[in-house]
Image (tube, rainbow, N blue to C red; front, top):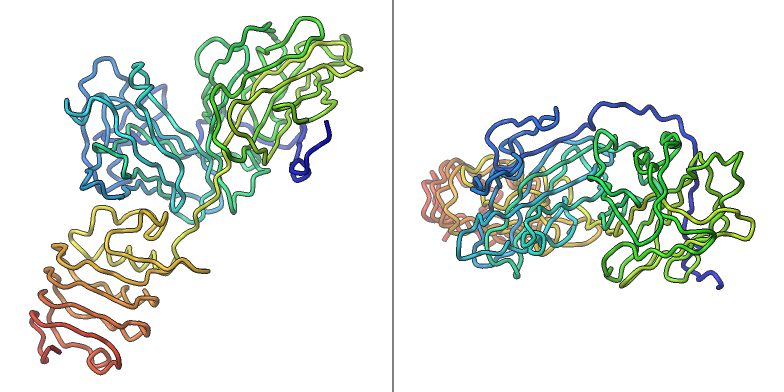
Length: 496
């Protein structure tokens, strides 16, 4: 079969020996036990309570017996009138570093007898929609659920958000959150300036025991067992994983799927129907024999009858092959066949597949800093003022509208009758794209800051607050400004 044009943009990367220092220390980052009020040690790793990472939501205890500590509590977030609102965990990170983000869920009936099934809701990282969380089937089976992705930190903080949507019927929740630093070589064929990776499946083929994770995997990725009705090969000889860019655990090379003699090996993997999208695929191989004594094992690989790679030589040193952008939809069949010059049957040890997510962008840094300073000056800011203010567009902060151009800017601020108290931060003057500010009918105190930098401002409503001092002259005399300040305690007369 001829190679279709879309394959020309793919990068296939083989075993490349790198100078990598592999440490047995746990991966750096955060293990957050959502809803917990104290630290917990599990397998000598410390899980933190979540109060330093989020300022909203309620901590709740589950009454289900025999749960491990990280699933015995949840943080729950209020659902109000089916509004699209997000609630974000925010952590300090290394700008430009790559992070494994993993969320885990166990419902445990936390929303009461009127809601026997878990709610369905969204996950967001910074300004990017990640995926829908639907744990209904796992919960019906008595199982927990987890989701994993790889994102690059675009700033010194990263936010992971739980968000209610129109299909959310009860309070969304989360059991645990992990944000783990990955090595620079991992998944480095992906352009993380524009994309992120959302895990679809990661399996150790032929492995039939528990999930492989840390300490076998230095980065605590989960490799699930996977079996097919084919031969399973066992091996005591495993290659050095320091030579693989993705640094898989050596344990995945202890078993493999194969066939008798030289027959092709067909896998229905991943074991689910895929939505129409573009995927990152990594496959791992190692010959369990001593290749110097046993001859060659050379493979042709096709995915849904399309050539993935030809003449892949698999030795005891191992090999890996990656497709950085491969279109798939529906059921997937991987076919491995022996090349004409091979004297051994095909085999495969492990595989990973990720959905490639296009990043959603970020609100202009100047506006983010200004809004966070404004948030700090308010005693009771809106509950969803966390994460990215403008993105995703369906999840802008309460009271904010944004302009999505070359730079994503905040253009209006409307918090009328929100019961706000506190003061007006001078940082509001840094929101230089604002055309309108509506803050009337609250309990704001203090003075009006200098807003002369807001040259586009057309509306400023501050009536019925507890503001004092003088109204700045540059506001009173600003041409074209609709200014309303009655119902305050100013020293100078208020415009009508």
